[in-house]
Length: 327
Image (cartoon, rainbow, N blue to C red; front, side, top):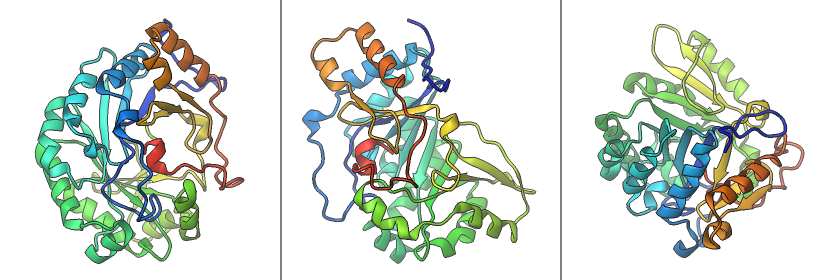
């Protein structure tokens, strides 16, 4: 097998965002409705054996970064066991985790021993009452998880904040100060019209360029860089190690440099976050397809990867929630 996956726009696919569950123990209003229960049954999730096999095929095709996501990935029982199996695969150079950190205090050390090196943690507010209003959960559990990640030796620890007008946009400076004080990397994210909940949150949308200009009035911002496979554009606060990333799928999309695909918990390969192009891999896995046949199917799917999303032009187009796709 050739060792690269290249789409028709000459983008090299080297990064898989791997959802291990579509379930979550929080209910962020821009992601999942509070009463939502229409999750996949565990029987429909890929097994650890199936996940390891698919990721091994991807690594032989040149993928060298994998991020474990959900839903909330730590809802999946024995996640450190899976992480250790993936970390041992030849060619996989970077295994990371995206989490809401509510369960991270219990699992941080085991994940670090298993081979996860970096964590991204969702944190939209530092106010406990506001956190409960946004997520339905308890802020103190997240802060405990963040501290456990630091104690376990994860580096870097990236804090992801979805900035929403009239909800938490008054806290961006406070979040900068928090990350400065604790040595974290900070990334601001624009809201996206993913599913009904995402579209309802679109009236809270803020162009992050306005946030960058606002921060520049208080902090000296220099051009910055950060290793990793994601789409953030970074600045660095002068005189510090703090890097601030801006993830702008709406105001300044990064489709021309997209290097990733998403594998959902049920084995569906999503080729674009903002389009419905996909390939169901679970039937192939359970019908006895060989590794060569899996690789051929993945190559054919990547050849159909769309040029760009249409979040601005057709916000109604994507009906699945983010948790169905993988974060």
